[in-house]
Amino acid sequence: MAVTSESIFYRTPVAQARVVVTGLSAITPVGTTAQKSWNNLVEGKSGIDLITQFDTSDFTCKIAGEVQDFNPDNYLSKKDQRKMERFIQFALVASEDALKDANLEITEELEEKTGCLIGVGLGGLQIIETNANVVVDRGPSRISPFFIPMAIANMAAGQVAIKHKARGPNYSVTSACASGAHAIGEAVSYIRRGLCDRMIVGGAESVVTKLGIGGFSAMRALSTRNDDPQKASRPWDEGRDGFVLGEGCGMLVLESYESAKRRDARIYCEVTGYGATCDAFHMTNPHEEGRGASKAIELALEDASLKPEDIQYINAHGTSTKVGDELETQAIKNAFGDHAKELLISSTKSMTGHLLGAAGAVESVFSILALKNNTAPPTLNLENPSFNCDLNYTPLIAKKRNFKHVLNNSFGFGGTNACLIFSELEN
View 1 (tube, rainbow, N blue to C red):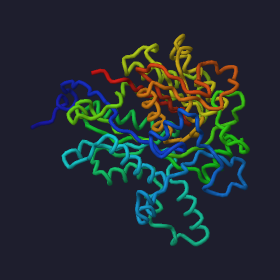
View 2 (view 1 turned 180 degrees about the vertical axis):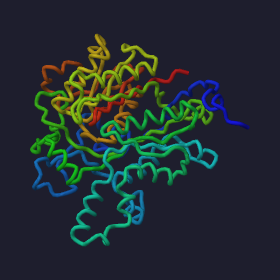
View 3 (view 1 turned 60 degrees about the vertical axis):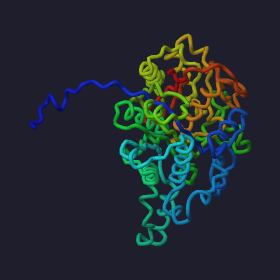
View 4 (view 1 turned 90 degrees about the vertical axis):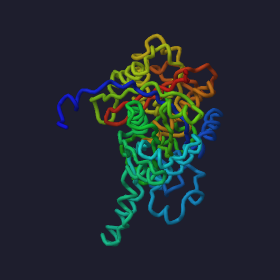
C-alpha cells in the first residue's frame, strides 16, 4: 500500500490514558525504604552528618547527606557490585522494591509495553576519579574494562531494564537537579499516549566524592557549617550559607489506570500535571523574577485542569541557597497569587540534603506520601526566615491538613524547571 502524507500525519485522535502510581520506594540519607524515610522526615530527623566516604581534611565542606545503612552485599553479588557504580546499585535495589510494592512482576506478555526512565545528574564520579588516577599512575592498559559502563548515566536505567526485562523505552534523563522530575513527567507522556502501559521511573545519584564535594565547593555553593552538620541545611532561613550534597534514589511504578484496575492494584494517587520550562537566563542562577519556575507551575496546573487554589501543599525545591530560596518564593507568588499565603510548603532537603539528579524523584515519593497521609513534613532549621521569604514553609514541626492535590518543584542549573502534580484518585 502506498504511504501518503495523510496516513503519516492524520490519525484518529485517541483519548489520553490516565496515569496512576502503584508502587514506590526510596533510598535516602534518612532511610533505605520509603516508609522509614517518611517516618523520619515527619519526626524531623536529619540524615546530614560528617562525610565518611573519603578523607575531608583538605576540604572546606566536610558534611553531606550520606546513605548510611545501605549494604550492597544484602542485594547484589560481589561480582555484580564490581560492575556497577553506587548510583546504579541504588537504582537496582529501589526499582525492585518499587515493583514489590506494586505487587507487579514483568512477565513475558508485559515486557514490550514496559519502559524505564531514570534521571541521573552526574553519573559515576567515583569511578571516573579512580580511573583518572589509574591512567596517570599506571598507564591506560590498567583502566578497568567496566569503567565506561559504570560511569555513564544511562546504565542505571539499562541495568534495571535488564533485570526486569523491560523492553520499552529506556534512557536516562539528565537535566541537573530536575532530572528525576523530568524522568517522571516524560514517563507519564508515554503512558498517556498509549505507547506503554507501565513505566519504572525515578532518579538516582551518588556523588559524595572528592570531585563532587570539591567541585561544588569551588563554586562556593555548599554549606560549611561543619561543626553542626544537622543544622547546615536551612532553607529560607536567614542563616543559610549554601546547600548540603546528598545521595540516594527514588523510584515509582507508573501504570495506566486501566492496567492498574485490571489487576486490582493498590493505587497511591494519580499523576495529573506536568510542566517543564527553561529560564534561558544564566547557567546557575534562576531567572531574577522567577519567571521560568512560575511558568512551569502554571503549565502543570493547566495540564491537570486545576486552578491555583486547588493545590494544598508544595514540596519545594528549597535548596538552602541565598538566591534560589528567595526566587522560588517569588515564583510561587507569581503562580498562585493570593493563594500562596494559604499553601503549606516544605523543603525535605533540610533533612536529606540535595540529591541532585535523584532529588525530583525522591521528593515525588515524599509528595505522594504527604498526599496519602495528609501531612506536610517540616522544614528543619527554619528559625529566622529571611525578609523576602514570607510564606508558610512548615517550620520545624509537621502539620496535618486534608490534601487533594500536591505539587513538587524541581529546578536545575541551566535554568531547567520541572513541576509535577499528584492528586487523590477520583474514580
